[in-house]
Image (cartoon, rainbow, N blue to C red; front, side, top):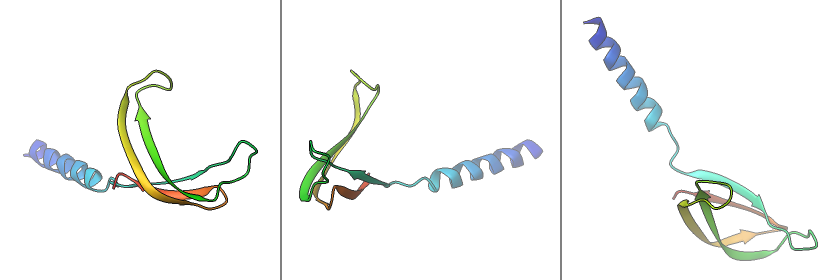
Amino acid sequence: MKSLAKAVLVFCVAFALFASVPRVLNYQGKLLDSDGVGLNDTLDITFKLYTAETGGIALWEETITDVAVLRGLFSVELGG
């Protein structure tokens, strides 16, 4: 009986941890021109995650449209 109670407890904890994982990631960045000056524009920005730093395979990709960039600073929510 104790092993069943432990199994239920482990399942409940694992479920609670999984349920609390955020589905959206807030990301802030800065875009500069070649002179180091922050951009002021509205842009479409594509974000990608790869399996390796160079030459890897893309695992995930998302394009956010109409990102407001002010003095180079922007903020987006990824995973929506």
